[in-house]
Length: 350
Image (cartoon, rainbow, N blue to C red; front, side, top):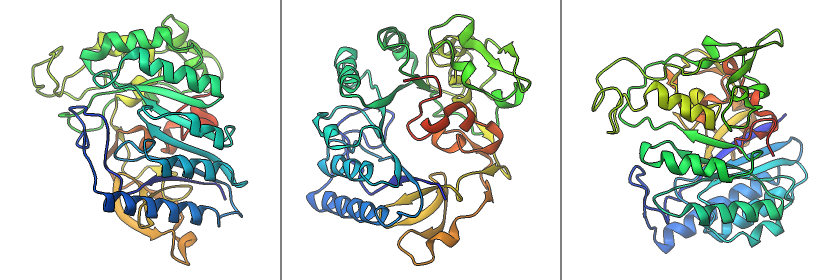
């Protein structure tokens, strides 16, 4: 059996101070950090016992984990396990990178987020170049705040075209009602949607039909529910109606999958891999289907853990985060990402 685990331990400290993040500049006591380390080391030891099945791991910490050496060591240990196919982590890329030389880099991947309010583009790009030089696979992303649009455009220009740049839609203050979805309006997304690699142009806005032919995708999806925003359509404030259709089109030229992220996908009763071949695990080993359904279904340290892995329909009304909706069967995003699901790298990119 193939199993993917999204691990999130108790770590909650971060060296960045983004104003939209509840963990900005949060610090932890030595005792709290020691507890996080013990939880992580226990998890890695457990992973080593799963040699009869292939295993993929994505660390999704609340804070910044790679400034802690025990996360670097955990990634090195996991990538050296024969049955582990992928070990990835979400990071702001502020750490030193010499530790990657201890890893099997064929299995290592980084999900790197650029924070324009916390570091310069030049410094961040220097880290990206170092990853390229060291032979580490990675994606790059940024939260699509309006005040950062110029930085996002510059980042796309300056990154190699075969490095995927994703944009997370800013959704705070917006209702979670289901919104029109590209997967409903159009046939299944495929790698051909991404052929333009975010450079603009017509090719980046085309999708593959079920019959294999190409058709032009909508220039701008309608990602927002009807309602009263903080400042109305096109407002520079952060509210319900955050993006205009023109902004959506611009961001889609940078990230062809932006409309998928700028959507709350109807999910109640939908088939999803979460809970069967993908699970969320916390520091004490508690298993949940995903980070967004709080009901526990088991514990990895229990003798009967494997019995909890089975297909379950989603119990949430909507799903609006990549690490959740990417596993919805209806969206067919595994066809788009291939073996890059955990690190958020679609087919056709480095």
